[in-house]
Amino acid sequence: MKNFCAPDTTALEQAAIKKFKEYFYENFHGDIFTEYISDLISVWYCMVISIGFAFVVGIIYMVFLRFCAGVIIFLSIIAIIVVIAGGGCWIYFIGRE
Image (cartoon, rainbow, N blue to C red):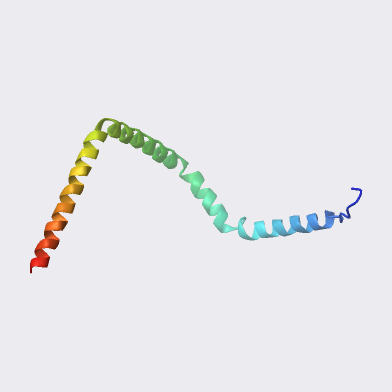
């Protein structure tokens, strides 16, 4: 480095590593972190089954939407019209009283 003054950072690096290790062992090496990991290890099979079930249900839902999307949209449009008309009638009768 010709034109720059670069300080020696080895002492800073060692202090940062030491501080990181202290922080890690105080906060993550204790009870909470090991509880989380042990919980994940003890229920891994349940998580795999849940993920598989969610995947299958998602595929079934997508197939259902593929074949019934037209009907769902048509019924949604009719439902919106009925709700708007019903709300209009309700407001009209409240206003007449």
